[in-house]
Image (cartoon, rainbow, N blue to C red; front, side, top):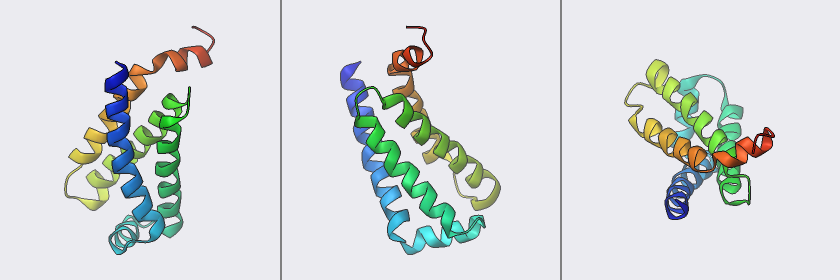
Length: 118
């Protein structure tokens, strides 16, 4: 499971550093996407910070669950935005959400320890 976790976290890192970095850098496509969503550009910055922060947490000892939860929750929002506002396809967000859920599952002992059940 160790190597599966590393592989999943590496893939999530590549995707979310790219996407979060593009949001924070103000790439035109991201600006237009968030204009379409209609919540303002502050939401683009917030999402970018959450994505980059989630990636950092994936690699900190005993923080993988927190990173996976942040990234997974972001993908729930992305799925909803695609379904109700943006249109095309929510499949990429679903795949990333499932990958985040897999990391959460692999590191579930952290969650149990934080809840005092380990």
